[in-house]
Image (tube, rainbow, N blue to C red):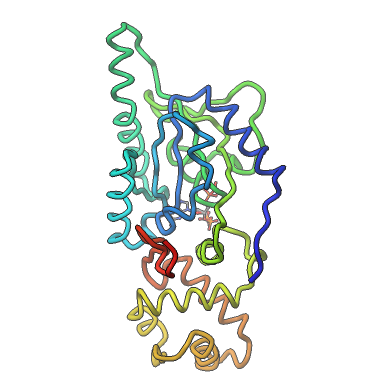
Length: 284
Ligand code: G4P
């Protein structure tokens, strides 16, 4: 299977940009994908942000299997993290995130208050891998459409802050970190959710991975969506059969497109690809 290379130059630039901005914020808001709570986090995150308080948001919770999201929340909380599952496309996300931020910083704010220092608002920066929903969340928190925030590299001179309400300000440029690729399954999981460019991995590998995952964890969804599918068959056979059944003749690419699109959009139901304790494929 193809391996994905990240340019060390890009990584150190991304890291430097995040670290330069750390000094301006009270806490960091880390966005992970609720379907991939571990795989969608940067492997060096803790090193990069150090002791800075961290609010972990499991975004796209509407697309994830809520049973596993609960397990992940308990897992991260046990490790001392402040974590909330959100759907940034929903209005309610703003209130949820603001409340969690105030809770995270409550102690620090109380201490300042004791010393007579009244802090006007909390400042944060949003960081996460590409496509995890940083711009969507920023727009949601700021309550307006911010033009192409995600596409601007670096931070413009003089920090710009987005005021969300009287308690929270967000650095207007999100920190974009590279995703984690420590085994081939991580890459496939990322590709299946659309977290990485489609050109990075062969779509047949991604589809086979997806069919196997649904066959193992959500067989009823495959049976419901693809009537008559033989769940006893192996993934390549299932793909050949469904391509025929759907009338695509031998146009397998058309089936890959359809399957991946439906998985990503949630048409095959909610799902989770990372599991607490193991990745479900024999890797701890
Ligand atoms: P980024 O800045 O981190 O790169 O991510 P961005 O906000 O651009 O979001 C990437 C995609 O994820 C967008 O979809 C966005 O709508 C979607 N998204 C973000 N948060 C959520 C969420 O909580 N739930 C769901 N279901 N989707 C979310 P897109 O298809 O690229 O754009 P669009 O057609 O939705 O505008």
